[in-house]
Amino acid sequence: MDTRIETIEKAAGYIKSRLDGREPIAGIILGSGLASLADEITDRTVIPYDDIPGFPVSTAPGHKSNFIVGTLGGRCVVAMQGRFHYYEGYGMDTVTLPVRVMKKLGIKYLFVSNAAGGVNLDYRVGDLMVIRDHINLLPNPLIGPNMDEYGPRFPDMTRPYDLDLIRRAHEIAAKHGFTLREGTYIGSSGPTYETPSEYNYFRIIGADATGMSTIPEVIVARHSGITVFGMSVITNETKKEFAPDYVNDGLDVIAAADKAASRMVTIFRSLIETL
Picture 1 (cartoon, rainbow, N blue to C red):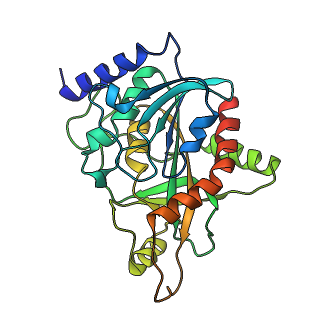
Picture 2: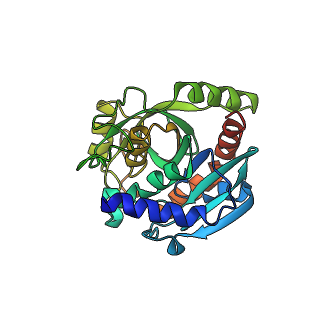
């Protein structure tokens, strides 16, 4: 057996043994500073990554290392409280392992979130951006032998983020009295924050927000036929000219994400109610 599939099946088998027959309809991946959404999940079972065969732990600031299975918006969900990043030294098979595992658990939808830098000059700290499209500067996680039982060799990526869920998200935000940005997310390896010239380059080629995650997970989800909704919390802003003493700080990023988390929870919970 392909060792990748063996790892997926062992991990999924262990998690299933803890679920008392529950089958999640949606998976949720929580980015930096956004783990508070997990507090909204009721009737939950918390499974530390350390307990799951083949799972590493998340080392990124603001990321815990738990799988949480329970109820959100009246539906059974599984949430990743902390993700794995390429910059942590993990290969793409490891970065995207949880998505394959959630597929084996039965999810039909994947909700991804991240803290992102605002590339669009109109964006401000605390804005929520629905991800409409992405530009990938990370290694593609499908490089290597294709896992035919999960999806085709060349998956279509014309609409990686579901248009109907995007439409519904805007309706939910309007109902609750706030607005959402909508744009293109660009993913690069990190862990350095971007230089001013890189921000400018990203904007020129069509990006609105930038980060160091999400895209590999989305590619693997779409390869597996999972419907995806993505959202970025804008935690720092680009400028035409940066002040001489300006710095990007990881703790500031987490704090900004925390402040916007309640609105993201509203969107995710309300969307899941409609599934």
